[in-house]
Image (cartoon, rainbow, N blue to C red; front, top):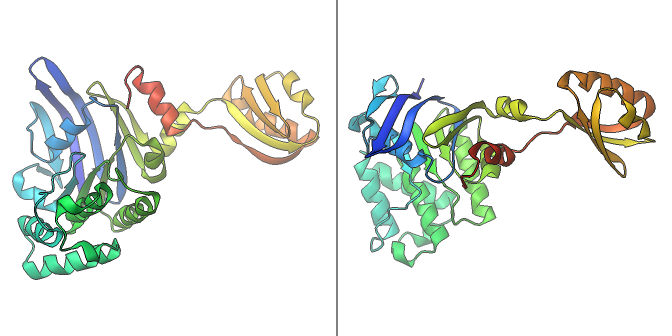
Length: 300
C-alpha cells in the first residue's frame, strides 16, 4: 500500500517561516486536494515532497522510507511553472524525460504512442514545443508527468490553459489513476474542480494547516442550519414555528434557517403534514465559500 506522510515539517527562508509544522497523510486510491491562497506554502511543501528543497525539521516519508532521490522515479510531478525545452520536438523531449525516469527506449516509445493517441495529439509529435499553443504544451507536460506510470502523481494546476473538452479528458485520466490505486496529489486554485475530484482536503494558509478531512466531513462542519425546501401549498405557517429563526420564501421554494441542527427532523414532520414536498435537503456551503471564509484577507 503506497502512501506519503508529511510529519511536523518546517521550512523557513531567513525570517519567513514558509511552512510551519504541517502534518498530513495521503493514501493510495485517493485524490488529495492541497489547497491554499498564493503564498500559503503550497509550492514549498510540494518541493520538499519532491526532495528539491530540504525541510529544516520534520519528516517526509514515501512508502515508509524517508524521502530521497532514488524514490522520485515512482513520482510524477506536474509543476505550476512549466519546464519544457522550447527548441525540442515533442517526441524527443518525451523520450528524454522518460529515459530520465529509467524507461527503456522501447517502453517509452510505446507509452508515447499510447498517450499522444489518447489525448489526440499524435500529429504534433514532430513539432517543436515553441510551436505549440499554451493548451497543447500543457497536454504534453501532462503526458510527461504520467509517461512512466508512477505510483504517485503531483498535479499543480493541471487544467491551466485548457478548454473544457480537454479539461474533461484530463479529469477522466486522473479518475482512472485513482481507480488504479495511485496516489493523486492535486493542488489548485479552482475550488469547483477540487470539489468535483477530491476525496480529502487539506487547506494551508500562512504556512499552517488550517483545515483537513474528507470533503464530506468538511462540508458538514461548515454547513449552516439551513434547509432548502421545494413545495406546493401555503408556507405561511413556517415563520411561526418556534425552532425557525428565519425563512426566505420565493414562489414555490424556501430557505429555512433553524435555531439548531437538531430541529431538522421536526421541520420535516411539520412541513409534510401541511405541504406537498418535492425537495427537502440541507443547504451546503460550497468549497469556494469555505475557502474564502478560512483564508480571510488572502486571495487565491
